[in-house]
Image (cartoon, rainbow, N blue to C red; front, side, top):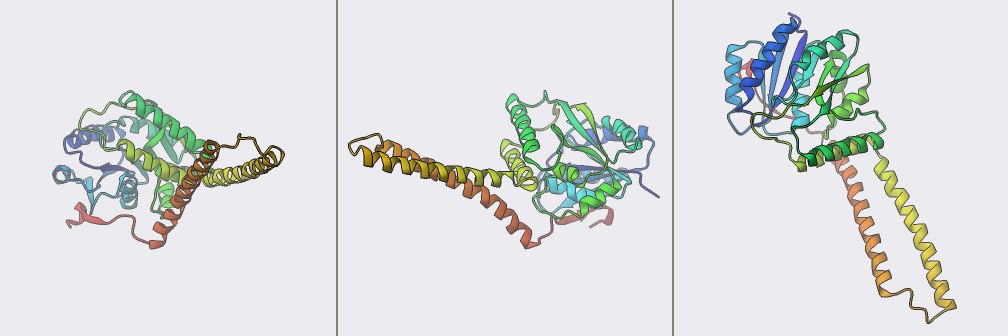
Length: 312
């Protein structure tokens, strides 16, 4: 039987909310009147999430659980779900119920209008702290300016992908994945869907500020070399400025040997500034080199420990 819709839901330590999410998701999918499958990707949970998922599978043949051998991260869990999905369309949604399953109906309607990608745009994030909202807003706009791709602002991973888009994404094997950027990069007809992000009712966020920073770095370094160009321009500007300053200092010393304008403080400040810029530049270049190093290893993006459909 042809599967019209696959739901990919990454799970990491969500034992308290999975059953609620599943019931709410089923109500929506049954109203949609489409053949479907639900793929839960257990991204190395250390609580009882897997046990809860396996119980769901026992009572619902349309559900499948893919357990990864460890925590590979949210973006790679999504990748695993896309690889194992078979539906004509795939919807990626987190299992924490912050992205409302009811929006799936609207996504399907937009997809029927001929769009290959329908991405959710958060028009409100009242469930998150003011600091997180501010940093997220800053990152999305910074990435939009730096990237060579048109990556939608305020769009998360909640989206619908047509099968041809999924197949195109499978051809992108990079390790440091920023799925929102990759979906923009592959192209096709894309449309936004505005929705209100709900407050997390059960459990706590598994995306602390440190993970958000790493995701931001992946997004910037994956889709832009402008930071390197900024470093180059800064280096050239400082080199020219240093040469002019040196010429001025020598000339001032020749014309007025007694002048004390060029004191110890000025020299130390200049050395400190140069050292700081050099370290930042080396660190930035190191990020790009690190990405090359990881790609050169050729390791698999993830490892599956168990597939409920194969009873492994």
